[in-house]
Image (tube, rainbow, N blue to C red):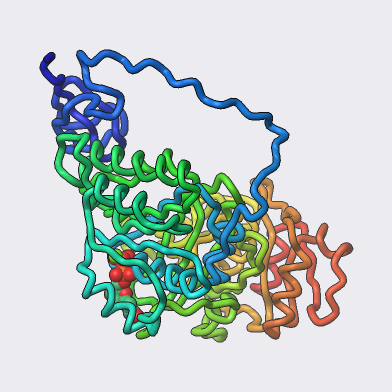
Length: 455
Ligand code: TYD
Ligand code: MG
């Protein structure tokens, strides 16, 4: 038999190299290359004769599809992010920092589905059966008919699934603990994670069950990244939260069967995760409206309007190069807003440190936040608090003009519902919006906003 060929695989991005090197050529990470046996098992090792292909059945595209392609979990915030429930025969990856609540969320979803009669198999590779039971008791779902196992061997898991009644949902927690006989490397390496995920994804497609893989992400990228798995699965959900906050946000970063801009909001309580159907109330809950430097942004997360507070602190810098720090927004976008304020509105932020944060651990990706960011910056610089009953939204262009944004009426309705009586928005959006309870102040140049705050 031919000798198995050695290769070095980056544990961060999965790129293979024939030699060991300190830095991965592909992703630039240091000390991530680990020795692995090439083509371990899956495609047939070197020297093995390739298998003759089987003739697969070709079907017309216009054929009838299954009538119930999705199973709703019963947890509305989770279903919102998946696009209406788990798709049969699909594979999902739920990623997040250790301890953020992935196991809690999935155990809760398992219990909810199992209680409604679906067969749910929960395989834990990290916790013993007794530990999972203890957690379920704490969450008050211990009586749900979930089939439970503590197992890490992929072959054993698949044999068990094949032998039992057909499952609708299979949770595997976590992908890093699994190992398969077909690969020689240690559990947790890219080769093992890739091969294990592949086997489970194949099972999902063949059986029609939804397979949910849990993956830990560490900042150091020490554990074989679920990054390799991201390309293989149908949907990738990230569970995020800020240290010290009880809020957790579930976000789809990839979804073959739905939108990727919806978020699900949860609160971690002593009895598991609680859904937060009105995130605006939560994000504005701890607001100190009288302080300068805070602006309420009327944003959109997918199809849902979400109001949140944007906080800025502008302070004289002791450093030659002032600091710019951002939490929850894009740093490049902040630099742009600062540049526009400086060159078109006569606002001198240059020698100051600038800190910007979105309250509550929310991450905003919309350019519509430009106007609220500008308002918060000017308010902090001048020490003038913004009117507490106002919301802000609008995109700022490099020329200093304020551009209209989508869903203006949904944003205004949400502002009205939460008791805001004034909105500063792009002038072009004003004519079309007729919201009774909110006074509209349309502006078409950022300088008009600056003048109104300083006045
Ligand atoms: P867990 O779901 O184990 O996180 P992960 O699977 O992402 O590693 O959640 C762990 C944290 O959640 C832990 O710090 C305890 C906390 N927790 C609660 O606050 N309330 C609960 O009801 C449960 C089950 C966990
Ligand atoms: Mg866990």
